[in-house]
Amino acid sequence: MAPVAIADFNKQPTLAHVQKTEAFEDYKGGYRFAPIEEAQVSRAMIKRYFNTMYERAISDVVIIGAGSAGLSCAYHLSKTRPELKITIIEANVAPGGGAWLGGQLMTPMVIRKPADRFLRELGVEYEDEGNFVVVKHAALFTSTLLSKVLAMPNVVLMNATAVEDLIVHADFEGQQRVAGVVTNWTLVALNHDTQSCMDPNTITAPVIISATGHDGPMGAFSAKRLVSAGLLKELGNMRGLDMNRAEPAIVNGTREVTPGLILTGMELSEHDGSNRMGPTFGAMIGSGVKAAEEAMCNLDKCEVVGGKVVGRVSA
Image (tube, rainbow, N blue to C red; front, side, top):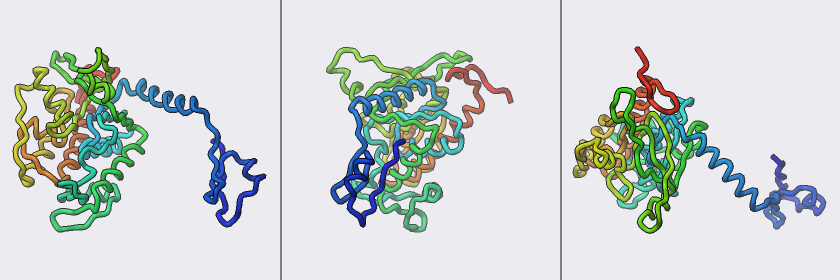
């Protein structure tokens, strides 16, 4: 990488120095960028992005949704098992789901104990209110968590990418198993009714973790698809708000709901028919961590070849 000169702000740059150094950092009128060609920018992005798509066509774990539950899951899983290839698919351009604000568009984030331990692990400051803590701005939590997840070398995030379907195969025991995801650019997925057929792409993985939230435009996707695919008779449908019932139900209920598919976060409330908790986020953290634990347990029990489960590991 070419060196970048740092200006002494107490001195005016000389013409000879500017001519010698292509890039020069000076905030008194002499700031210069290193030259670049437009094609270089295109090739730099294309090479990395499509190499990543090629490499992650087979992943160890795919997480659908980069909200608070999905990101908490990705953080714990990637930190605990750095050898795993973890691919996050997020339909929105901006990851983070609904965790950029608290309730009714207010900025503070309330997290009930014991999920405050996760905040200390991340280094996010908070005010202690006894049974719960308050982060001054939800975006502080989400941006910190997102930056730590993206810094993990075994994590890839593909945002503005929608999961349009689940791959379902008969496994080595003849059971129907979720074996991957079907993806497309979100803008394509939103315009199938206005254009001719625009076929998708696929990612194969032995474990899929779905964290798409409660019902909405793209919410509860996997739970709803289980019903239409004949793998689940009907949805439980999310019940009314009850913080004290909702949060433990979500964390303790986080599990593999059908072979190959783990549900976490508010998507689980639609699957199970549990209560919503509204603007308190401890369950999203706890459920994400438990989903990571479930994934590791499942992977340790399976023999995987080429991203497919082909047998069980003998005890």
